[in-house]
Image 1 (cartoon, rainbow, N blue to C red):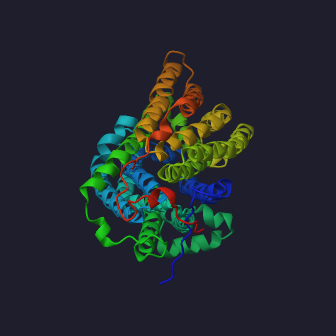
Image 2 (tube, rainbow, N blue to C red):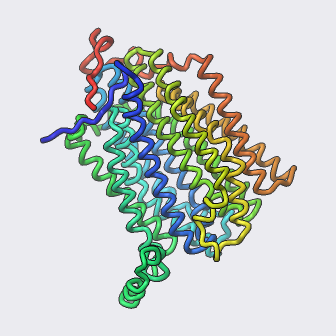
Image 3 (cartoon, rainbow, N blue to C red):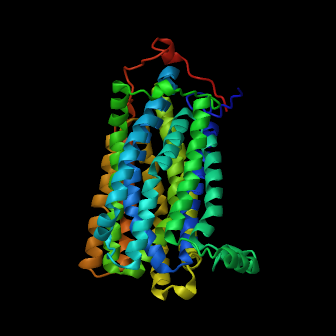
Length: 502
């Protein structure tokens, strides 16, 4: 059996090259993640702003459920990276197996709850039962929830490989998944009538012929959910086949899935706050959606498109932040706190230039960006106007948003997930929602008040985490301190580090 170990070791030697080797595929993976959202938004946007609004209403509950489960996989990254840094390879395999098992159970339960409660919960964020938008939002939400376990499987695989130091393999699988989604999406959503893909490639005649034969006019908004679930499910199955076959240099066996009380407790201890952090962010997104809904439907549609395009900056920041988590985890596991700090500062320097460019582009091309994702003939001018304002106001603060995510990732990589949770709560629930509420109610700024509230939170949160990074003792929070269980529970584990295999 051939083995392809693409993992990176950041505990010795020059730091810049391995950090880039680890982080660039993560940034690529996150950009590919953006492709899911952009393809869905572009294709569904051909149905009109009502369909886009239905997706926007659905996303808060979907994000909340995904956060509760995927947050647990952060424990996989932290524990795998720190055990690898300490040379505890037997514990790496056990943690990987337990992460898969715990995530599967949690995601299965959340999938059932979300599917059943979708019609009841959606009206709380602004949908009106009996309307077309509510019906579309319910259909989309339920289908995504039905496939949540597959999606969580992909998250778990990515987290484990990330902690191991292999970020290329997950990127390749994500690329295949995105291509599958891009192929399936237009046909599930639009069918063979008014299909923008056929028009773009000059095959309108073929479209008419296929529609006459099949009569398939697409499934609308629900078709986007079906395409995404199928594409992500295929990626998850392929990932686990690679992981359990041992082809990646990290061989997990079925016996590693057997529950171990101590390991499960550790995963919950580290992953629980991370899950709560992401859930708090998702609830905040829900709260912001409610505030935007108070302004009007046009603002909701603009907010949905704005957030999706915003991920062109946000998700690369998350990708680089995930590289920081692994770098910090491996080095603290190897008792290299100074090297861990240098890795974080290096990531901040690398990311800062990219975020500044993104700020300039968002401000300069705001109107063109928004117009590209709507059929202008079917879209109210107010949607285009407030969407452009979104980027003119929020765009200049992208650099602060990136700084916040990179520094908070350092705390997670150290195992200080409760610290990261506290800063995320402050960012959303103190610096964002209360000022936004004041701006749209007391001040009466409408949609612009929402955009200014988001911009303020980016700056304030970045200042807060920067102070703690400089003066706090976060780098002393090594998750497995005093717990070198496994094959390398000897003095050698303090002096030896695995060789770079990339």
